[in-house]
Image (cartoon, rainbow, N blue to C red; front, side):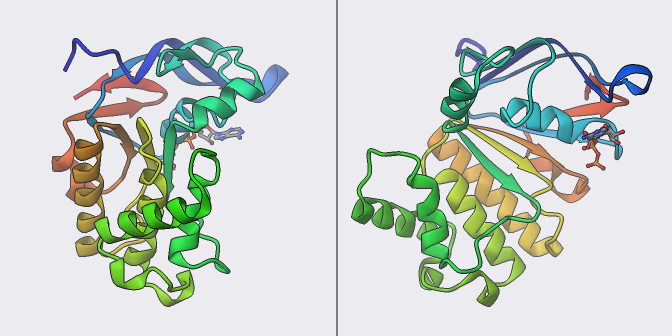
Length: 228
Ligand SMILES: Nc1ncnc2c1ncn2[C@@H]1O[C@H](COP(=O)(O)OP(=O)(O)OP(=O)(O)O)[C@@H](O)[C@H]1O
């Protein structure tokens, strides 16, 4: 695995919030590499900086100091256009799944393909249905989010994140709103699809019951990364 180019490569990354006298360092000298096909779980106490690191990797906030490369592209000093390009290679799964209520499951998944101009509407719809089938929702493609259970909604969010075959999936507490059986199903599904598609997964979680699905667990303590 180590011979491959890393999907994520971080060197000497620092991050700060606030200005002037209130400026506070949140991340300290982060160094990390994540390789294709790896499932990495990031754990740590509340406020230790996990979400900050995840959003930096996702190109959702600006890198202030150090180097952070996604698929070989440097995010430090990247402009907006470059960030948009990089985000197209990333699937995001968040706790609150952010499905649009007025779109069906299929339309929600299809939305993420609309960024990829290579598919026409029919192709995008067909791909979305295949993906929903893969997450066990073949019988729910035309349902609206309000008519789905929490676990089913999170499966739609996973289908949406993976339908464009991203090289990297970033998940922030994907099981937080789910009961233990649905949570387990959801992460096993992510692990399987990640293996099949050869993408890397970085997952932040407080859920100790799912730690065994990780290839590697990394621990954040007061803004410092500690390998387990
Ligand atoms: N926009 C912001 N402005 C100022 N401080 C912030 C901001 N976002 C986060 N922080 C602070 O940065 C620190 C790290 O927050 P972060 O959300 O990354 O932690 P976390 O490990 O993800 O926590 P949790 O597990 O509770 O989600 C916390 O002290 C938080 O209060």
